[in-house]
Image: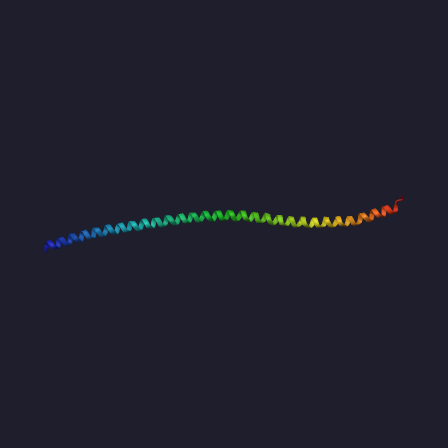
Length: 110
């Protein structure tokens, strides 16, 4: 009976050692997995930060281009108005000039 108790105690000791080894291995695996997850999360965070910065630069560039486009549209509208005023002045001058020349022709003796 003592022999069976010793064998049982020894087997229990071996089982506990195996259990502790397995527990430690699982703990290390979990720790390694957690470390890997944290590493990937950091990598993803850095990647997102890079994308945000790139998007911010692109948005700033597009904003400046949009402003320049609006400025050019305003300048174009002003030039169109100026052209229309110049064409109206030319038409008015063409209408006045022939009358003036006609009067001059009529008043000057030939």
